[in-house]
Length: 320
Length: 320
Image (spheres, chains in turn cyan, green):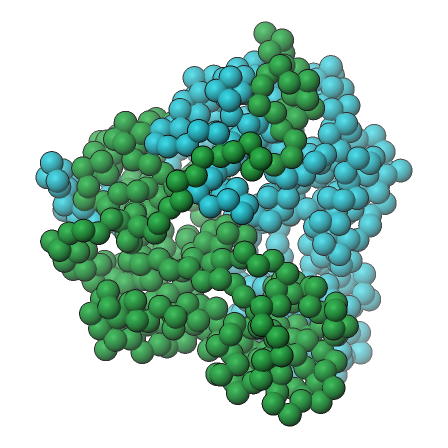
């Protein structure tokens, strides 16, 4: 039995992600988990560091992008690594007390309120912001509708007024399961020996020399090794303007020849390298970009008459 | 006289960024601005599109990274482009009513409350979440402390209890001044003719073919043209899993030979290209990365005994 520390309070989306995947985690890591609510992400990292406990935190949303404070904490974390990645639809249900009065108000975290505008306007409710969606549901009054993850209903003994009341139906957040590097190494060694798994790796590198071409050279290294990237971003090094770390997600385990070759070349250049997460590869859609998927506007040819307006240059004639 | 539309309510950090820079904007764009509060970012985009009006929205924070929903809106925006970039320290002042009672509560947006934990715990205040920091200050009761930007004091007739009560002093948000492409082209043509300005360009490109090396090839193109990047990220194309757009910030105006060369090569490859923002280049610190700036852990050599633990491989011997 291990503890799985999540960013609370009870009934948060992170709690829901932990509960929904507890069977998967148990099966994968050969133990059962009891969940423990933590007040801050820093508390989750502190509980996992150097221990047998696991943690779970939001990592990336298809609407908001990376959860940058959690990513930065993982880059800085002394002994914590991501070992599984699970997704959760960000759906809001509307809850009421079993014997509620006339409903006049709606309560949720301001982000929750902002994501359910249509429902709130249709009901003509007054908005009451809460510190979290779970807190809104927990402290619901007789004249309030609370918005939160499905599990808040059972958790706080509420009736469901309506399911999935959010405006945008496709919002999804990916969570990382966290453990110590020692636990991760043990699990990954077993998985390698067993065989048959495909992994994906998130790693960070910092070139110590800067200037034009440093990044292109690093990415050439990955291309030459045959590594395909599914995500790439630059992040300023905290407190040091003008310095950058690069975070890449690639379709290989860190012990595969392609990865070893690329990482060795980066290290031989004097770059700083750390692996942030290794997890079973989610199924990626093989997705050619069709022209109908492109945003409105933009151009695809230097001869397009819209190029001046869209690129803000004066074409090939500019300053040549 | 033009209207400058900001994401409200009155007293928001975006309002503060607009007010603090109104002289700069007036001087630069040869007109005075009257500020208008908008309820959503979409309302700001709608007000700017096809008009002479300007807008201002948060673009990037050194703590949270890009404000991804605003970035996505700019990628999709039919006729809106960034034309200036200004920074604002995210400082919270603590306000009270002039004839306040005993102070028992503190009110702000949950993000504001989370950023002022030390102050709140020292005062032993009960937390009252609000829909925005400005709303907290506007609706302050006699027993409450409100947290918000400095301008909320004068705006809502409040006394300052204490300045800069946030936990972390270095938080900074960058805002983009937005206008129509026609206004931008007019201004940029004048600036070019006048000369003496140095510009920076944010642009997005989407390679229509995907696979290993597509990105490396694009970045090689920029390196070969001599373009230096100060920021780079990949973003999934909304609603199309597995497809990506790339957003790069480079140290050149779009009409400079280096940019024209790189953009022409991308277009000749069949990539889709759009310029998102062109603004006077902020002063970038020339910053070599010193080893003391690196996060704890990680490795810099394949022979480092910590490499197994930090990279999660088995060194050069792995699967070779």
